[in-house]
Amino acid sequence: MWTKDALEALLDERVLVADAAIGTELYAQGFDFAHAFDALNLNHPLVVRRVHRGYVAAGARIITTNTFGATRLRLERDHLADRVREINRAGVDIARDASQDRPPWNRPLIAASVGPLGRPLEPVGRLSEARAREAFREQLDALLSGDPDLVVFETFSDLRELCFAVEELVSLAPDAAFAAFATFTEEGKTLLGNKPAEVAREMAARGAAVVGANCSMGPQGLEDVAERMLQVPGTRVALRPNAGLPRLVDGRYIYVNLPDYFAEWAVRMADLGVCMLGGCCGTTPAHVAAMRDAIGVRAPLARSGAGASLAVAAGAATIAISASEPAMAGDTDGRGD
Image 1: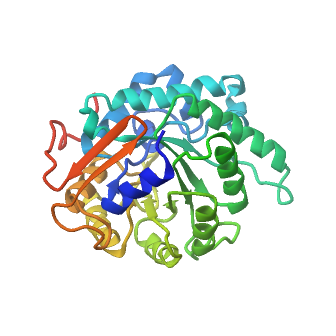
Image 2 (image 1 turned 90 degrees about the vertical axis):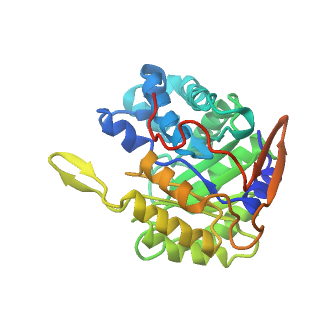
């Protein structure tokens, strides 16, 4: 598993383009939102693998596992609480398998996804801190058994809940690299009123390699959030927005922000200093490919010039990246199997 220092070094040298939506891609293939997408890791692993491979082919440098809702508390709804370990471990294995067509020096990092528990904490709701921590710890222990490269905490609207999740990871793997994402309203706060700079400071204090915002209202709405996070000294910022707000058309949800728009936005955000860019609901391999092509090989701000190179050791793995990096077969395909 990568360490915080190794991931930070990579982010300082190069803007990383991550993958995009998993859930809405599975929805597009006919799976209903009413069912646990995480269970597809066991029931339809080839479908999940195909989604990941679409993003690998599009040039994503980070592939996120299909484990966003794979905690006991969320899986109980589908009578899958006794399969937490299987589902999470399978999620890591499928994502890694999808990246094997790439040469070792150019394989994407595997990010184990952890989402919120879907129940409000006390005193707003009935979920106790002890039970929340137990659920996060169980999921994280299962994910870590698959040896992902990093952990990504996504779509949290309660900073206190995000802190619980992060603290459980740190207790299990003190040096593990992780990214922490909150989701913000149009007012620039989380649903529980946490401000961007507050989230950035709290996560940096707990060891996050990168902090950011995902989901929310769309690309444009996150620019102010990024600016506020970047004001916190030493913070590395990531953004993974929705493709705008969805519209219901003929019984299907459609997202309106097209790949070209994401490409233009990604360049602006890299110029601002954002070091990781990807997508959330409604984004596709085409969005990822457009951002990758627009950004190319460059650092956020002016931390490295043309021709800069990097060798980052993470455990036994080494990634070598340079401005002359060759394109690979499938880079412009955007499709999976």
